[in-house]
Image 1 (cartoon, helix red, strand yellow):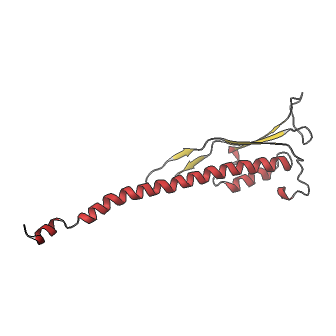
Image 2 (spheres, rainbow, N blue to C red; image 1 turned 180 degrees about the vertical axis):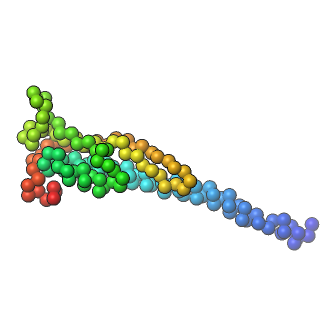
Image 3 (cartoon, rainbow, N blue to C red; image 1 turned 30 degrees about the vertical axis):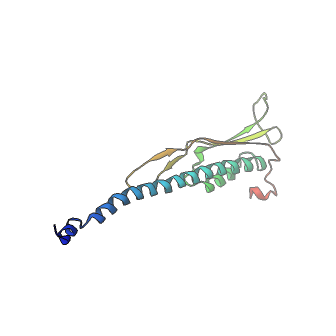
Length: 147
């Protein structure tokens, strides 16, 4: 076989090799990017819960700003996925006031992450996140954290 005939048999092999390798490479690249987004959302969920608990112990009871500021931290978070619980010692009426509350617990549950991988619709349920802090003064008056 002559050298130019052998070269003609090899024509296009680089393009085929590139197509095979690039498909694997870009699939791995999208997986790494999506995993990074998932870890960022995980951290944002932890920070949103921490912020909600911090606001709940220094602001008025059931302040609407608590859930609003939590939803600013985490995209696509809804008010229904946030639970703020004021904990008090066992009482006859089982109510909690700024004077009787001992702690505040903020929980984020039911959050679902939608991936951005093309042609693959994947929903990942995030685990529940909870932060509990002891009560502080629970008063929004002249408190810059509650504004």
